[in-house]
Amino acid sequence: MTLQIHQFECLSDNYGYLIHDPASGETAAIDTPDAAVYLAEAEAKGWTITQIWNTHWHPDHAGGNKGIVAATGAKITAPEEVRKLSEIDTVVSQGDTVQLGAFTANVIDVSGHTNGHIAFHIAETADAFVGDAVFALGCGRMFEGEPQQFWDSLDRIRALPASTTLYCAHEYTAANAAFAAHADPDNAALADYVTEITDKRARGERTVPMGLERELATNPFLRADDPVLAAKWGGSTPAETFAALRSAKDNF
Image (cartoon, rainbow, N blue to C red):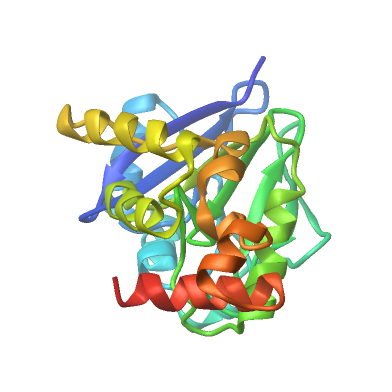
């Protein structure tokens, strides 16, 4: 049996994810933007949500916790910050693990967007659910963290096997691609990626999930240690270059 991943649209631009272990029958909701949509999607698949794994506390990621728990009795695994919105059954942080049947997810600290943000990496299937830490050709706004903290978080994502598939939480790729092309105009691999993204969005297709290997070659926020970007955007350290890129994107 293999891990089954069901992706679907919810709210205005969120992606929802249900992951299902056929052997145990367990299903985890990765974040909970909209309880009604998650419950309907699970019912359509014939699955019952038994767990909730939250990446961070923002309402478009944990706002559906109470509704899903009321309907299913699902147990919540989350960083401490999620207590702002709901109770938590198991608090997790960097280095912890979470089980879904026979599958193990490693918890990674990816704080910066918020101070407690985590990601879930399932090494045996080469999948990582990264919330708002990193997007296709982008990263989350730095609402609570500091540049060095956020860069260190992105470095942990960069350290995952290049074959990892990244599941982020929003369809922001077209806007991210426009900034990436502005930030790194001479990157041929990026230019090819932008063309592909433009074509996909014109057809109404998803650009998520994305491969880490491609992001490492094209995502400017994952390349803040590249001398080309440092020369263009300034900074004597990768964290300083990252901060310059993040500030520029905020005002792009």
